[in-house]
Length: 387
Picture 1 (cartoon, one colour):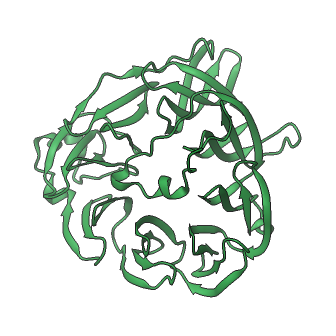
Picture 2: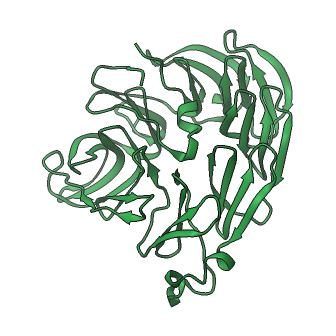
């Protein structure tokens, strides 16, 4: 059996590239109390479960069995990072505790972590790049000593991509390239000053100000993808900041990038694909709901993750008999919906890990018809299989 894929492999993606994970056919599903700000590590899930303030207690779950193996009285709202040395559990108000992984006892209290600390990237075993309110920067692990931090200031940073020794900070008005170990700015580009003169942006539809709306993206080769309002996708050279290519089309807020250099998104009930290095849109693949779901009049496909064979997404479809919601598996090459698991409620977070789909949101069940924060776990054929 292989080693289970951890949160490290999902959060800390070099260049924003997705990890390769398998999931083809669901065989069962379970509804749990919501897993909140969870961190998967070596077959364990560290999180808090539920939705009420009284639930804000650290728990450890056996990932294979999906049962709580330890419930503590340690209060917090976010498991920010876990490794062999321990875990950081914070309450979002600059206060955090460092907890031993085995005993789940507090080893250090009153740690001054950045407010709403989120470890965005592991540079090496001792350095974590973080984003918080109102800073971003690097801390030493596990001391949480600040190496450097920068106030976001006027920048409305939408996305971070780390590649090699640099972090690219994409904000609504431009792009920063930052040396991730020192915090020094290599260059700062204003969309208005650096790219507005390009022919693609001369149309009146862009108005007086050029804005970026990218929330999730990636780097392929030397090209970083950004999307401008209202209707342009562009590839930017990560060394110079120059535009490498421009496509006049509506781009996605969130682009999932696979190791073959393709960016994936869904629009107008079709799988859209972008060859990032060439700057070319590939032929769209229409999503075909039948025969799994019949008589679909309209649909909305929301957040999605990707296995090596399928796009796994939350979807609401309207049929002649009304609206229904599902987690669906769409063949990456065919566009055919191969399976659909019905859900009652609204999904706000969805990801794939170790042959399971985890979908968290406000759900209802047969036992409790009132919407509550729940996590639906859909297990694939073969059960729990480490990626």
